[in-house]
Amino acid sequence: MAGITASDADVVALLMRRHGDIRNLFDEVERATGDERRAAFRRLVQLLAVHETAEEEVVRPFTRANVPGGEQVVADRLHEEREAKELLSRLDGMDTDDPKFLPELLALRLDVMAHARAEERYEFTHIRRHADQARLASMASALKAAEAMAPTHPHPGTESAVRNLTLGPLAAVVDRTRDAVRKALGKDG
Amino acid sequence: MGFNPLEHQGIPLDRQLRSWRELDVEPIDPDHADPRIITMNGIEVEAILFSHQFARRCPDPEVKRQLAEVRYIEHQQQKTVNWLLPGLASVLETTIAYEQVAVDLTGWIARHEPDPYLKQAYEFGVLEDFDHLYRYANLYEMIEHRKAESIVDNLTEVMPGRPTKFHHRHPHDNVREPYDRSTTNPLSKLHALTIMSAEQQTMNFYMNVGPQYMEPIARRLYQEIGLIEEEHVTHYESLVDPGETWWEQLVNHEYNECYLYHSFMEQEPDPKVRAIWELHLNMELEHLRIACDLMRRHDGREPREILAPELPNVLTFEQNKVFVRDLLDTQIDLTTLGTGYVQDAHERFQRMQEQIHGGEEPPSERVLAQHREMFGREYRVETEGGHPDLASRERD
Image 1 (cartoon, chains in turn orange, brown):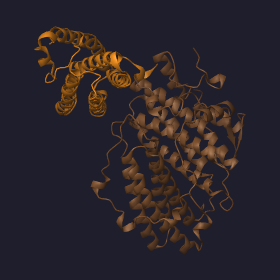
Image 2 (image 1 turned 180 degrees about the vertical axis):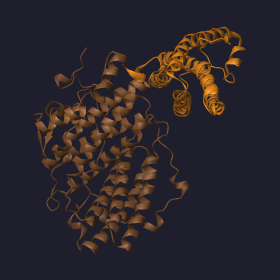
Image 3 (image 1 turned 135 degrees about the horizontal axis):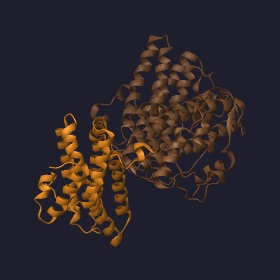
């Protein structure tokens, strides 16, 4: 038995590994140049957007409803996310060969890392404490479903699932994501 | 010419106290570890613990007060040095940095140690820390999906050393013979103190952070490797001549701190960190002067008699891949018997092995099994070719 570390059936283990994937992709962008950097950065933008949206759909509702002080925990995370997203949209409009790109990317890397560590220390520990194995597993499947459906671009100011829905071009994707999450979690509404 | 700390004046002790603002250092980049920070934290922790032990055995209230005053400053030094570590690093990342420091520092000291018996003690230890690095690196990839090469910075490879499960020896076999304080090269004293301090800090670190992990395999791996750190501290502390007086030991501690801060000041690439090494060197020069005065007064001896005339060559962190590969080729199957080293699994060793493993695979083996199950391979960094020991090559 591989235990929770290796398990895909534990939402926390899955999220922590995703944090590593994101850092690896930052390394790739930093190391590459020209077209390769452009392509790596596209993948990073996509991975970040998918990951954050999936967390918003799956993890935040659980924290809010089940963790003591969960509202405040979620508010802190949304605040961090918002800062990172603003920086990300600024970078998204920039040419990856621009001399200002790398310093901005470094700032984003540190913001994203601080957010990830804060999640691991101040949110995920509580999730493991308050969710049983079945719940950790159902959230893991929901997360994977959400990752498969989520939008590829972040929009500052749309940290909550409800407002994501109002966005024109992405609304359909988010809708499908939400449906996939709810189906995977086995509840409606 | 070389730097002689006895001939330089430091900052007067009454001007060494720092305010909160001065203690508030900016941490380093979490993706670029600095082995000198981990080393100096271990050295300062030893300075503090040694001073406490000394004070508990010291009947003279005036000396106690003097020790307390210097110790408070040393604590501020520890707070400055260790607080350079970034809060963004995970416990496992810091752990991997600790093991890498252990490999590089012990490797450097083994290569420069003049006494063959002491050299063997360091060479023996290198292969164990090297194996710990490999086990933790595999755990790191499992939990955080990151590869340890971003932490070890290409200084060392990551592959099996002497397998961790064979590090569990009977405690009697961890006690070495000490050097002779009257005839040994002064450099040997500095080496023993440095490695003992580094291993002691690693032991303390694992003791405290191991249970912070939620993952069962991580908790168990910290227990296992934490117990080996106990063996390593026993191994290295027994190299120090117990006949050194407390005053003499105090002088050796302060002298070693001067040596290391001076070394790191010479080679530190980060100017903000270098400024700290320089400041601390200037503080240590004064601590050394005070220790020398105490030794003259209470021991009736001249510190120059026990110290080197000048500091040895600067201690550096440098690539050691060839050195480690050579050890892997020749010393992977060594264990200890009494105060020496043997290649056979002798009776006392086997009994200890049977008792501690209880017929099961230990956590250090399970972590690799779980990693293989998850990734279909191990995590290794073998930049210089296949493993020198055929039996340690990865099975497909």
